[in-house]
Length: 264
Image 1 (cartoon, rainbow, N blue to C red):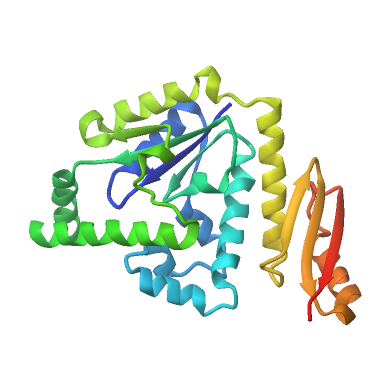
Image 2: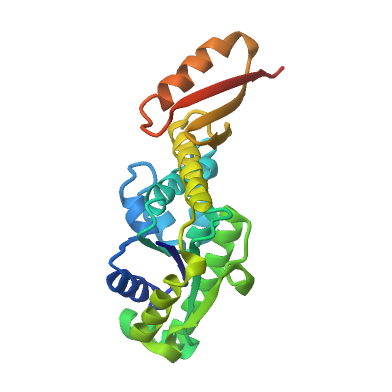
């Protein structure tokens, strides 16, 4: 089975397409907002909406290492689901948490601006001119948010396997095309790609569990984890015990090797 990540902008009908793809394939459908709703720490309207990148970044900067902790949480929650294969994720940039996975289908949904303007004007009961300005602002903020978090330009077509114009095709045909593409042999899981995403999911879960160590280095291989942190030399054993306690409840973790490097 394949994994499908759909990147969508504001009011592109990407959510409708994602849900229809999931229906066709019998997959589960999950979004960034649904993941945030499961977190007491990051269930914050400013982060969900990202209409103003300055406000969103200020929210994260209230926390020590807020960006890193947010990224660790979202990555762990996304990969926890995607490692099961039968999921459609839709949001801003979910595919950037998954590295070198051959059975990942990366989709970008776009729509004609005039159609989006009409829909936005009706939805918000505003003039078309104001709707156009709002949409352009939203698109710019989403691009800034992706650059801030992931260091990528989400509008770059080279980042995707397919770009679908939902204005030209409609929701149903767009979903059918994506679903059919997902069944191609090149997007089916192999032993190597399945092992890779399991390793990545375990590493992400460990990073999220190490909330007090947001800059810890973590690598994994077949259930074994290697954690590297820096701390004062006299705190080595205390830090090691805290890390062992933090990751002790992770089911798929068979062994953890902890290295504490002193800093001066």
